[in-house]
Length: 301
Image (tube, rainbow, N blue to C red; front, side, top):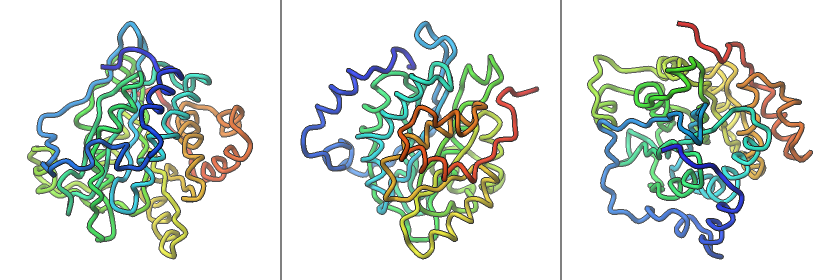
């Protein structure tokens, strides 16, 4: 995994293969699967150096696939992920990106609350993204299980960036709801097959993931009355790592992802957005107003 490099021509071919009807039913081939649980027992993902990626940097993009968020998966597959990758290659905020995607649901109600691709460096990033299943669940219970991505990043990823260079990767989750406060022992056992002596709070899981990753969340503002409360909840939980973007500005998601990666790597917002079209830069800049980075990318042991 993690071999090859991403090219605009490969993306053009893949996008053409999607055909003219680009609904989620057409894009995501696993949509109609038989509902068998996605088993993560013993599953690990590795981001390793190789001749194509001599200084691999792991990037995890986790996105909500519950019922209200099907448009987000389509946006990532058709536009935002490709644009964000091209920004990274052109402006090099990180070297040798290896990108893993994860589909996030609700472990209190869904059969497949977390699905993960491999860390990849070429067009397989998006090919594997469209192999994920849009379960379209969610329990209507005041939250989704974004904390599953933090658990997986902390306990199930192995990266040369961390092990050899003592540097952090990037982990960005995206969604429109609050995060459940706790990942219970029973949920850990069901989703990952792991035995935990106690329930884990979201704060504990963020702290565990932050040992190896800069952790961010992008909150989608739907224009609903409860959105201000949801974003306030994220700001309290993430402590300077939560951004918000309007659903109507979702086409600028690529610029925001790229800007978060750039800021995490020590660039100022102005530097990060210098190469971005003005309207998208203005939207991303507003979102970055709530972001603060205080720790260094280098990790001391």
